[in-house]
Image (cartoon, rainbow, N blue to C red):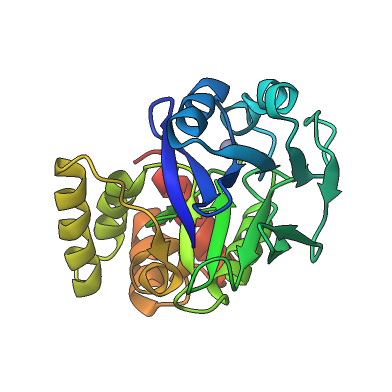
Length: 259
Ligand SMILES: [Zn+2]
């Protein structure tokens, strides 16, 4: 009865809309832009009941104030001085109820220090994750505030979610991410197949999301830091030996920053 669909915003953001077709109630995740949300709610005749925020960047919270004023939804987000208009501040392991379903909060610092993700086992017929700018399809967020160690650990938490978890991240970066992934792992056959599929989707102007944790485990280099081939490629890129998975991760992140 519930459905999740993307509202495209700005150049490459997705604001995820969770709606109940029977009650016409809806929630949105990271409404960076109020107008596209208002237009979609009107078009689909939905009533905004709640808002989830993952972190403080403007392209994730820009529409919060206007939507709160207009529809009076209950707003949830991280405890953060940088975000106003949050009714219910959240921290690791908190739970909330969304359209009668339980949602768990996972703290995922790294991209920003306040970053949280939302996980639900029951919202759809398979588990779902809203992870903002932490885990992307084929990649991960940049390190703006946290350390490589923090983001590595955050991604590891997400990597241990059930393999069939649907990953709803906040940007359409998949093609570029997979081009980088291919540079790291030119012989990964699953990656090559995924790249081909993603290219087809983009040629047809389709979103490449959600992905699944299983897909990310087999094709996303940032979740594959313990693979010998990934380690060796990173070592040859920086011409030095890398002793820990976190070192491999930090190398991948810096490499991708200039890709
Ligand atoms: Zn961000």
